[in-house]
Length: 88
Image (cartoon, rainbow, N blue to C red; front, side, top):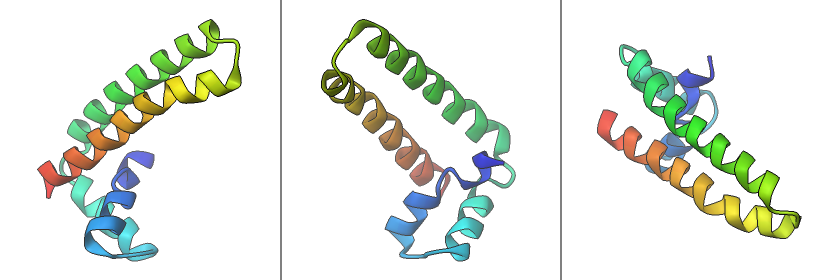
């Protein structure tokens, strides 16, 4: 179900739509492309989780964990944003 709403933030930023309208717009973008969006976002999310887990296990300091995880999460968000533009 969360796959339907993966583009909500991108919709809010680009289309200046909020609330239920943003949820509906995100769902409409995914409609008919569910497997593609699930596959791409799931793959990159899995890579982000593996990287974050490795950083958590290898880095003792919470501040360093945060700083090392920030690029991976940023890359994931940029990927979602690019996928949004590709589907738009």
